[in-house]
Amino acid sequence: MCIRDSSKADGLRPLCENLFRTAGLCPLAVRGLASFEDPVIGATMAKSFRELRRVEDKAAVINALVTRPVWAAFLLTGIEKGSIPRNAVTPFHARQILAMKDKSLTNALREIWGEVRQSDEGMKKKLEGLEKSLSTRVLAKGDKARGRVHFQALCASCHKLYGQGGKLGPDLTGSGRADLGYLLENIVAPNSVVPAEYQMSIVKLKDSRVLSGMVAGFNERTLTLRTLAEEVTLEKSTIAETTRLADSMMPPGLLDTLSAEQTRDLIAYLMHPQQVALPDE
Image (cartoon, rainbow, N blue to C red; front, side):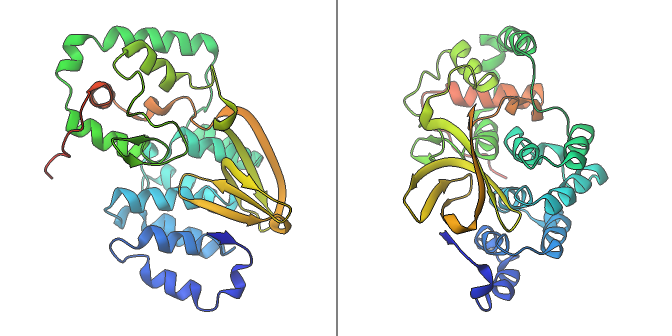
């Protein structure tokens, strides 16, 4: 996808608005709508969140709402009012809101959603607590099918496992997932060691959008950014500022949105050496 001037795409907005509630096409429609700088679009998507049933549709809406300050405000208001669950917003999304450097949004985020970062000592205590609580006996009771559902919601947008998932992060299929300590450290404290290819870049566009992802390529005219939702090619003339962070694309705190039981199920699934079927629902 190449982002230029959305006003040149005649009929794009009404087409995307019509497709928004069409099964299987919502994510595509949301990507089209995200190119329009109109508060009404953000407000409509935030209000429609509770009506969406597919995980992919909900994820697409959240991904879009954190690209514009005005839209992010609608997202936080939805969480505050209870129409959008807090756990729909991952630390990745929260960090993108912080990257907007909007004081009112930052304060609202911390009040409504919570803090994004933890101290090194806090990380250490969390790791110790998780390793202690996730004993072999506890993990044996884990529902791996439910764990796969949690993986799809939290991890699959960035990581591939058994041939399915995103390309932002490493493929987990052949990683050291069987080692509980190694697995937890990479989830809870992903910034401890960050290869250059997985460092995060924040791209601010002249139309007020903020995108985050990994720079996949560039030339004299364009920059290609691999985001949670897609790989986009941006005309450099549309970019206001690009900042490369030392942080990993994967933010700390991903497990904070899960209950103890959900964490157990996710870890049990990740440590299992084979793919499991999704639960019957």
